[in-house]
Image 1 (cartoon, rainbow, N blue to C red):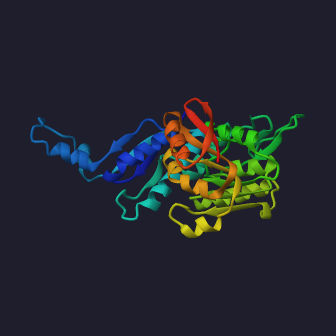
Image 2 (cartoon, rainbow, N blue to C red):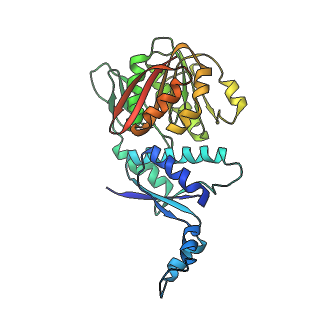
Image 3 (tube, helix red, strand yellow):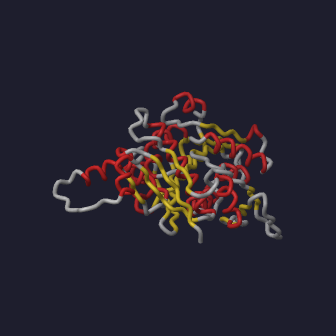
Length: 321
């Protein structure tokens, strides 16, 4: 399998937080290049060396970079979309610029090539008992009664191939009742909210911090013949944008949030605000090691009866209010 190098530009102060968030996405290995560390090494009076290569000396003036390697397939594409969404969230909070540029750049591959190379791996996929997810460029010929959910993710997270999305869809299928209104937080490609409407929801509101994700979700809803009056997608961060938080303010029957653990915990009071009494909350994007932490935070604001769906280190959890 081919791998793509992704260089994330940050600052010394951002390294620890950035690496923690990358681990939440499922990335376990990093290469860190930091001028402060190298200058500390050079300033070590106890160091014993006769020669330092000029290339190494160049590190004393380098921009702090965290480098990761992503597989050249659909999973890697999902991870890249998650990285960019995560960087946008970090930027929204880092008003002082303490964490540096927070930009991800691919090495030795054009963006348009990356956007297309992984498509060979995205094939129709059956999820749960009722859905089959397919991209527009693939055919699905079957005599089963599954509902076809057509998704073109573009640069947004969510094709159903990643465990976090599938686990969430499985819980959604079991929980959704005809006529439910759904709020999809961190919608990415819109796969969860579109799937909800196809499964019988009366309508859905989708929100994402990335502008292109909201646009992609709207396009995907149209591809699935969902009329605009039943599906709305917004761009912005409700944690920092009070106007957007008010725009989507309503009482929903189901809320889905496939993000990462830290953001789910930060949004716990908004879940309470937006979910009707007796409603269902489905959270995902959680590495298994942090599942108890997320559940504990949600139980602390009144959610109960957690039902976990876990596979290969990832968890989605359904709770009620």
